Image 1 (cartoon, rainbow, N blue to C red):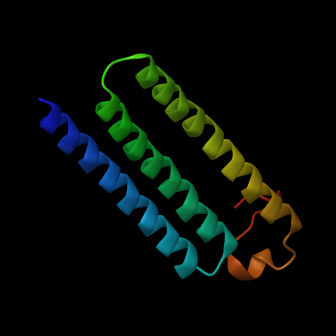
Image 2 (cartoon, rainbow, N blue to C red):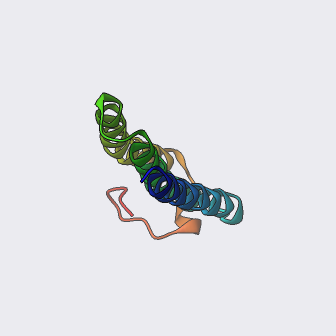
Image 3 (tube, one colour):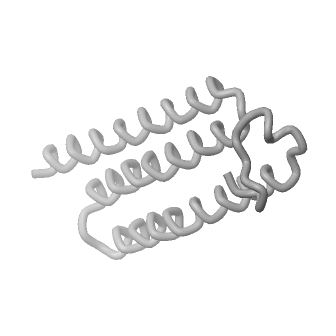
Length: 109
């Protein structure tokens, strides 16, 4: 049973690492800051989910598993909010934004 737990947990961790690697590739591939931010935010959320879920499987059912689940909840609540705030800051401060994308009069994209 321990081998099955190790293999399944390892698979989830590897999937998470591959997801984060694709997100890093997206950050370097895209040229515009909002595209880079979207790539990093989505990759972080999914990669962290897979890695921490793999760690939960490896640790078994105990108090540490609950702590890891709380870490997932925190990242899933804090990540989109911080990404949204950074995106709004870019919209409000970039004077050449109309060259990169279509912007409404109220400042929304």
